[in-house]
Image 1: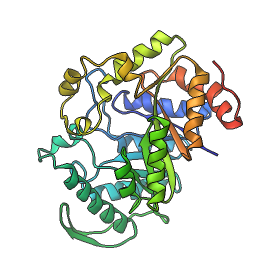
Image 2: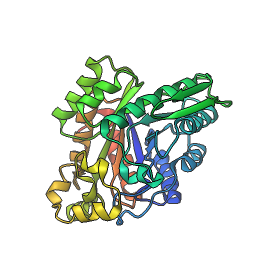
Image 3: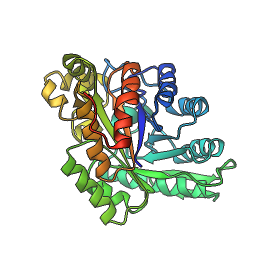
Image 4: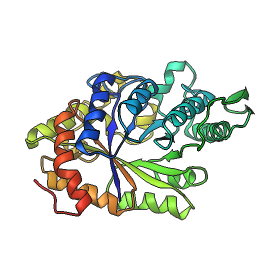
Amino acid sequence: MTVFGLHASHEQIHPAELLRAVVRAQEAGFDAAMSSDHFSPWSSRQGQSGFAWSWLGAALQATTLPFGVVNAPGQRYHPAIVAQAIGTLAAMYPGRFWAALGTGEASNEHVTGDGWPRKEVRTARLRECVDVIRALLAGEEVSHDGLVTVDRARLWTRPEEPPALVGAAVSEATARWCAEWADGLITVNAPVDRLRRMVDAYRDAGGRGKLHLQVHLSWAPDPAEAARIAYDQWRSNVFAPPVCWDLEMTDHFDVVSEAVSPERVAEVVNVSADLGRHTALLREYADLGFDEIYLHHVGQHQDAFVDTFGAKVLPELRTGGPGQG
């Protein structure tokens, strides 16, 4: 049965409020949760960016939910530190934690003052980081000289069973590449045909493990309010790579999104007041083979969404019913 979880968006919501939201989500019937890991929001309107790893320890302790995080090792994070963070959480909460690894965005990574590498360099750097992290979680002493440098690192606190290292991808080419090393795949909502191609690319290349999907949505009882929320909070997030990878500051995102239309936002966010439509879309995603689907209501207030989807949408998805408007 498909797992339906809550996405915790640190870029939009204060970590204390996010913690309350995941506790509420468990009470409402959500199965799991996942967390972003940003240094900066995408827009000044979003206005937050708590440290995910501090929050994850609190969230795992406050709930019994499994959690995942999407992380970009190699620049802002040294891979040995990422391995230590993964290992500690997985040791404290066995079987409840996974980490997705990606190449990152300049908006978070520029803070180190290092140059932002070309995409092919970032991809090669991530592959080195994956090998370092996996070896450390296996108990090896690691030294490595390459795009990242590691000197005689060893993890002294490790889980009995290393957690899944999931590949993050937004293209078929990256999905195929992730199949070489990942224990699963995570991507974001897109037209069904495109998602099917992503799934096929990963599986046809030998990709193993679970398929995860993050779904951006905006719901409110009033259609105009659902559209307003999406436009206010997510119009800076409509840009395809390489724009979304290479812009550095919230000012940059806010300027380039000034002329974005509500219709353009609705191409990347499932905007509707109709719970039946949300249910039908989520069922389509599950039918593609996604094992875990994480719902991200792009608004800054989560309570009504959590309660309503927990009471009306998730039960329909689990029973195969028609959904409710």
